[in-house]
Amino acid sequence: MHLLLLTADQNTPFNYFPVALQLVIAIGFVAVMMGATHLLGPKRRTKDKLVNFESGIPSVGNARQPMGIKYFLVAILFVLFDVEVIFFYPYAVNFRFLGAEGFKEVVLFVAFFFCGFLYIVKKGALDWED
Amino acid sequence: MLLLNIDAAFVIEKVILISVILMGSLGVAMYATWAERKVSAVMQDRIGPNRAGPFGLLQPLADGLKLFFKEEIIPDRSTQFIFILGPCLAMLTATMTSAVMPWGPDFTLGGRTVSLQVADINIGILFVFGVVSLGVYGVMLGGWASNNKFSLLSSIRAASQCISYELAMGISLIALLMMTGSLSMKDIVTQQHGFWNDGYFTWNFFKQPVGFIIFLTCSFAELSRAPFDLPECDSELNMGYHQEYSSMKLGFYLFAEYINMFISSAVISTLFFGGYNFPFMDQVQAAVPSGIFSLICVGALMAKIVGMILFFMFVRWTLPRFRYDQLMKLGWRSLIPLALINMLVTGGVILMTMKK
Image (cartoon, rainbow over all chains, first blue to last red; front, side, top):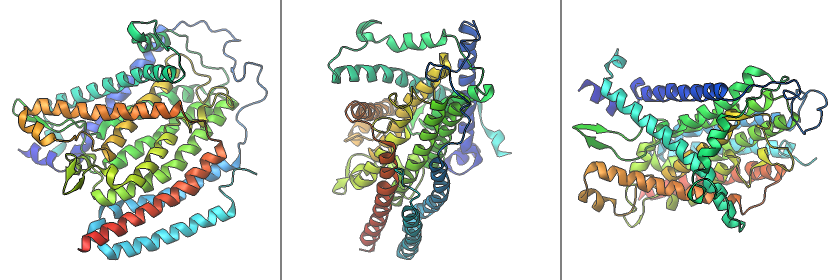
């Protein structure tokens, strides 16, 4: 009976137990597959074979070099905006409870969100064609 | 102390369910590779795989076995540990997403209620998003560890594309959550019971068409499938982030992609097309025992998933690829404002109808 009461509620550590179970099974599956392919495949390593393929011709220099700043800018902007999106989630779940009062405040929040968005667009942070 | 109350039958039930789902998603992923080749063949007026077994049905098995028996090559200039970790992470995240999917209604077996959902947690859809975001690491680490310029470029493209579209995806979902008022996948499905109620469709697709289109577009980008397959465009990058990989490590990347496609089809079906609900389900429920009914429901969900997967494939073989700047422009400048407007309009409409 005690157990049934626990499973009825959605918000106990107990509910996450099957997720942990799935994680364990998934890790086991990945490990077994990786081990199997390691054991089954032939191993005839030669020096030429272990060279990076890249484009099929001898590669020039190291790949660990600076990349375009745009990608990093996108990553930073993502972090900023995703935090704001996450704020919407608790609001959306309690939307009916908060009613018109809450909606006004969210409109204000979206306005701020949009200001920030317009700012990065005007700054050219999202321009990819130079 | 409460955690110690778990009984053995519960654990066994969950282990069986998890294994079946894992094997099922692997099987679907394997035959999705076959279906992709057949679909592309039909659309391009070719025959497609037809040597291994009838209609080439054994082709995916042959491909899988072949990958097992291939030599695994770890380039000597790569970072070994991360090189191996990359595909493992990609596969792990692909197999974890299915944990919160409700595959069918509960049924009773030998006096106990068996749930066809691994874990009914109250943050269901957030869990999916969290795990999907982790999937970027598999691609990013693998591409970086290869020490190959094309792989690096591909993985950095993939990462930046995924995170860009995640924003619009998240916001498009807010409008849906405003209507459901719950993040739990089970609740969302239960609310879409049947097909027709109170003079309107119950499925969220008919209530949130704009949200659905945004979500679908973002799914294409998240899966890096055509027309957004920029991380894997052969004409610009030689192959993609998995260019230096061989044997099952390559297989993991390819399989993870198809498992992700299966799972995202399942998520789209659950969120927008009523999950395991189907028209006239109440009459069917009254007519058959609960076990059979659950199976029918699982069948209905699988039919929707297969339909979605076929849609993904038709699009891939129909539309040409976007350019990278077009992709970023669509994601940031069109979809995010559109999703925000959709959210505000939804909120306004719900409030107006609530007041009556």
